[in-house]
Length: 346
Image 1 (tube, rainbow, N blue to C red):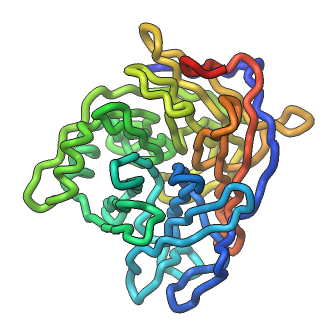
Image 2: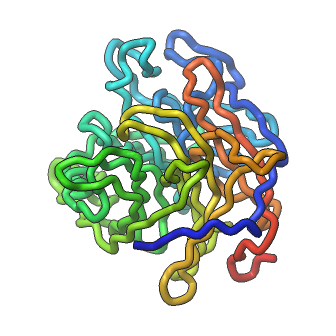
């Protein structure tokens, strides 16, 4: 078990925030609202930030300066619906896409969006080849064998699996599981990571009915600390400013949410930005809380993270307000204090 340490010297300052809305407005024929709902993951595609949503079948390609987005339309669910919530009575039908990774390829960016796996309906993976280009190609893939392998790896899945983050390190796809579930069958919810052989994941996604998925390996479990007495749990992760070293710096987000299980929302006590530094032997995890002017945790649910391009102190996060009628919010943050830097970054 790796224990995160709260470090009051690590500071996080809010530079600006902007609500996320579609540049073209609502489209009722597509069941698309005017705003980006429930942002759950961030990744760069060229000069835009891709935002995946856990309760709407769209990927938003956001201009970070204005918050205006283009939409990538995902396949509709039952009755042609692309929005899912309690009010509509169809929340259980959502794909619950939570993790998002951008992979640079010779012909453009590939986006990989991963469902949480918190129920059998949420075992989908989306691939978007040449994201943002006119010839982009999208696939929604049912991946039950992959999710079974992950769920059977109880050192990762714990009692109530909930995949929330992912990143690529060399030929490894690393998944981050959120431990906001409930105790079940003598197992406890875990904040944990595991590794999958990335080329084998690609081979499986190309032929999920014929190809066996890779087995998860390299399990690591974490205690991430707390905010206002509520346990912090992973909500996303990213490589620090494109660090491609063998042991890169990883930035992560975590939320302190009083969830009854991995499928229901709860009151949010606060959120944290943390750094996982494994450049030396072992792993050192430190985190900072998002605080108000009175140095109390802000009751905000940070769901996605991406590093900025200005310098190694700029990051972007997306807030999920857990309200289908309100837009998600993109925040530009500045990291001050003794945050570690990747090699070659000031």
